[in-house]
Image (cartoon, rainbow, N blue to C red; front, side, top):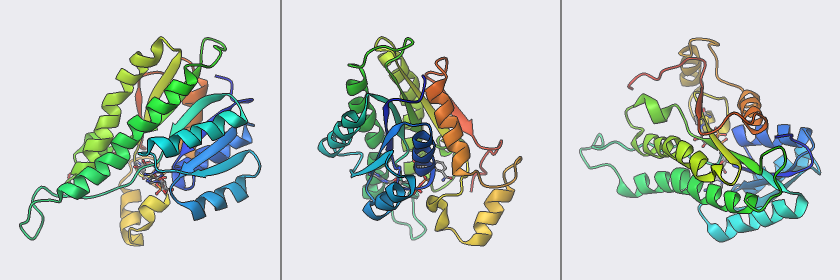
Length: 254
Ligand SMILES: NC(=O)c1ccc[n+]([C@@H]2O[C@H](COP(=O)([O-])OP(=O)(O)OC[C@H]3O[C@@H](n4cnc5c(N)ncnc54)[C@H](O)[C@@H]3O)[C@@H](O)[C@H]2O)c1
């Protein structure tokens, strides 16, 4: 897909990986709608990116709010791209250190934001894209965001791992489901990236996480995630696949 005269929705686009995607899409001349809960960061992102971007405050789990996001995108141009980055971390153990069972509410919340939010966003995007004119055999392309946590089984990550594994599981089904509509779906499973999501960790923990990446032994730059997201959008043969983007890290159990 040729990235130019079109619009794109980037969820979680006010920060981290999503912000890098919004920036790079705008640099290619794409009209970008940033959908994010964080109004302050959303405004800052638009101030930085300029007139190619606009911000709509929305919760990815909320159908009416996300419908407004897609309305805004379609007002700017033909909606041909979705980059869905909105997500949250969250740790729960089956049996917590105090002996109590892990929180069901926390599990549900993390799964809702990460997994249900992905389904909600993808279904709404696909329904809009399905009405697009076919250009070069395509109507649109969607990039979802999982995590290596979907595969690596780290202790304490049950809700996050379950949600992200759900996104991985959704990817091939979604690609097959949307094939007849000429819409592609791929997922990126990042390893460790230097974003505000990791900023809450102490520096020494961040440094030891970075050193645990085989090569390059550092945290990923959000721009490297955006490079992959834009490549997926541009390369018509990429479909139904989850791409690990992780410097060969395989996370240890703890
Ligand atoms: N940074 C990493 O190392 C890493 C690793 C693996 C996976 N990921 C995934 O990448 C994605 C982006 O992470 P990031 O590191 O850029 O984090 P981030 O915290 O910098 O950005 C996430 C953005 O999502 C927004 N958001 C959260 N819940 C939302 C909701 N319900 N509706 C709308 N917006 C919402 C936040 O406001 C924030 O701006 C997430 O899905 C995360 O799980 C990140």
